[in-house]
Image 1 (cartoon, protein in one colour):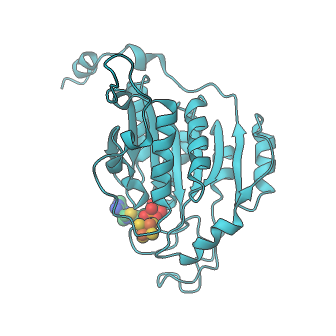
Image 2: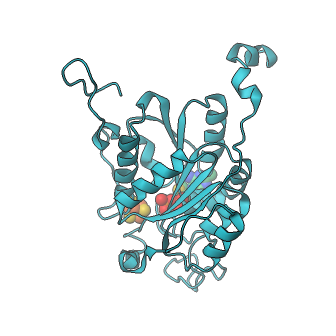
Length: 282
Ligand SMILES: Cc1ncc(C[n+]2csc(CCOP(=O)(O)OP(=O)(O)O)c2C)c(N)n1
Ligand code: SF4
C-alpha cells in the first residue's frame, strides 16, 4: 500500500476507506449498491491489495458506476462488454487482480453471450453481478432475472411472461470455477464472498442480491427472505448444480469451489507491446 506510513518504517494496514475515491456516489438513498461498494472496499482492505496492481472493470448501469467510486484502477466501459474488456486486460496483465462489476441487465441481457464464454474460458478474475431484477438506470424495465409475472413496467404491463435466468445455475452450467450468492444487506458476508472469489483460481461469479428501492421497492423485504442455503461448497459442478436447483434463489453462500485449471495462454506472458505493434504495423 502506498499510503499509511505510520512512523516512517512499517506501513499500517489499509482500511476500506483507502479504496474509496473522492467521488460521492449518486445512487438513490437506500439503493443496495452502497453496501456492495462497502463490501468490495472491505474485501480489498482485508486482502491488503495494492491499488496500483488492482483494476475494476464495469459496463453501464447504476451498478456499473463502481469504478468511479473506488481508488484502484478502473474502466467504465460500454453496456454488456465489461467481461470482454476485463478478459483482455487480465490476459495482457496476468499480474493484476481484476474484478468486474455490473447489473443483471448488463451481464445477462446485452452481455449474456460474453458471460457464458467468460465462464467457459475460466480466466482468473472475479465477476460481481449486482442483481436487482430490473434495469435501474433506464427507469425500471424488466431484465433477464425479472419474475415472469412482474407487471410494474409499462413495457410489460402483464409481466415479461418468460422464466427468469437463474445466475447461479447458469454460471455453474457454463463452467465458472467459483459460484456464490450474497445479499447487499450483509456487507460483511459479501466482503467474505468477494475475498474468497478473488483468492479462488479461475473465473469466479458472485451474484449479489442488491435491491433497487426506486423501481422495485418490494425488494426491501429481501432482508427477511434471504438465509444461508446451508450446504458446504461443492467441488463437483454436478453436486453444485443439484444444490442450486434445489434452492429458491434466495439461499446465500458458496455453491461451487471447483478445480478447473484457469485459462492462461503462454503467449500473453511472452509477447511484447513492440512485437504487437510490429505485427499489426501500427
Ligand atoms: C448499447 C446500449 N444499449 C442500451 C443502453 C441503455 N442502458 C443503459 S443501462 C441499461 C440497463 C441497466 O440495467 P442493469 O445492467 O440491470 O443495471 P442497473 O442499472 O439495474 O444497476 C440499459 C439498457 C446502453 N447504455 N447501451
Ligand atoms: S434506480 Fe435503483 S439501482 Fe439505480 S440507483 Fe436508484 S435504487 Fe439503485
